[in-house]
Image (cartoon, rainbow, N blue to C red; front, side, top):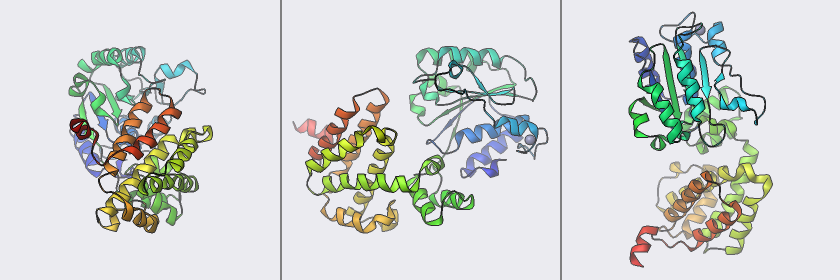
Length: 357
Ligand SMILES: [Zn+2]
């Protein structure tokens, strides 16, 4: 049932209407931030099509078909070649492909093409999810195009991505796009408290820093988050108070420590929210727009020293670093360079600096 999913009421409404009219497209593209529930919605579509005792146009969530649809048989080991195949649920008509490493493979698309041609084994429709569809390269995208051209009417492809711009236009144009919006902080907070995932005070903070992604809120450990944020607050202080290079290099070193390897990107995320908050305060935005509201006194003190022309450049540097992280780069050298170029960045955006030069 769509009602059990958090947020995105307009998407629920749209899907109910399409299902009610019996016009579910052969190919859909679900877009929106990571951790917003796109895959859960895709599974609800699969349930709606295959449920044995549907509630209106929706799956009941309780019959054997609905239950089996939510149970994926993921390979046991990260090295298994089974990641290169279709990962089936316990239901023989619902499967998923994920990128085994950095790209989705041609062979995976050929498997979908082959399977999509079969009539459903058990239910009324076969549903194939393609997760992180932005990881299609030219070859795998072309292999997928073959399926998208003429999917049998009992087979449905659901592509999922947070970066739709990375997809070939030919793929995008063959899918009905369904856009997901960030979930309101209040809704995430309510979910965390109602499901006893976090204490009320932690839930408020986690919901605010999750930036609309329930997945992000669920993956945060409040204590770990507080430590990460303390470390990033030092970076912001050093930048704002006239580029304390010793502190910046020390922070870069800490960020590169092996034990924080998995925390690298979350820490950059946190640094970005802190920069935005201080920037907002420096621009006299209302205090309610501050994400890290429990740090209001510290952020206000930072914002008073902040040269308002600089935070925009800092955020651009972080975004560039994120892009570079997608390709393999030397993290250590890049982190030192990141903090030092942030320190050196003038108030002008890079393009204008170039023109003046
Ligand atoms: Zn059911």
